[in-house]
Length: 424
Image (cartoon, rainbow, N blue to C red; front, side, top):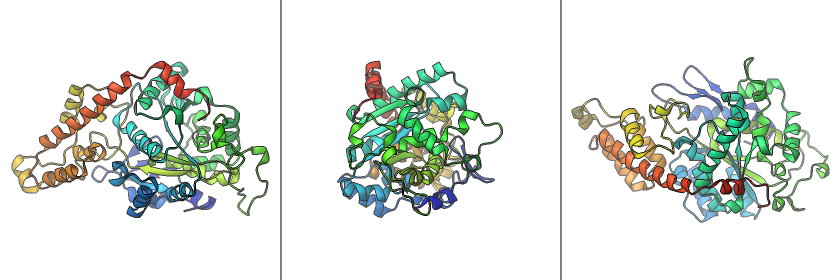
């Protein structure tokens, strides 16, 4: 869908029913079926990533699509086709993703957007900005300013350990960076969205912190290249944006000619409300609409009705967990789609659609043939629940231990280098 009206028409707050609630801050689905992603796509107006679009992505980048895309985990998009077409024409774009630092360590669910962003940065050889929304976590989690800044610094080390190119990556804290051109964009957007629209989009109510009511433009405006004036390569005469020189001509929808560098945002689909608002405002501000590639939720250990939570250690594997903790959590908490007895399991097989161990392997087991074999054996009852859990434990232990080695090498000076205001 395109056009300001089409984005705003689908911008109802959360997807709420008797079965599921989806907002940027709360995710829950039905006990049996989990999250209804078809309902999300239909109500919010995003589009499914089709096999043809995956093939086009591979052709444009001359690389195989990431497993998270091939397996449909990143399943929806807004204007990914537009990004691919503009890239083929030789036009620039940049990546934008973020992290709300509310705990001392990322868990596996937090890692997903950064894994796909790393793939996209490498495949397209493009710059990346990473927003650390430490201000939001002060409002939402009741953190003190000093605590939020400390968590931001530690979470930045986790992000750096993913392996992003320091020459093409700018990580910034809202508490430290907000101001100048960035803040001017926030004010421009603040003029375009009224309280009724914000309440409809985000579900704000009387008890909502005042800071949260004003926060959405803060998360929106990294979508615009002019928010980063220090990145001089984005501001040539050809594709830069100077507010004072922007065209004053508008069409009948109040839209200006688009300026600036296009943006692609990898995120989980619960962040879509922020960027529906952004896409509605962007043409009236004289910018391109940001494009998105959106993921389904990484399920909690207890099952698909929700997503991992940093506040519930039994729902998550953290990137600081030891091999023993990983093993214990998987064996104790990972919801099984297997049967109650070995005899029943051999006869009926497992339901791999609800089995957490199999679903997690879809995220982290690279070998497509091995994943297919495991799915077939487990679904037919020839593999037992203990065996698939053992496979997942091996995969996650290798992933987390490898990450911890890289994380141990990240110094404070490296954090300062990634967060330095500089050209890229």
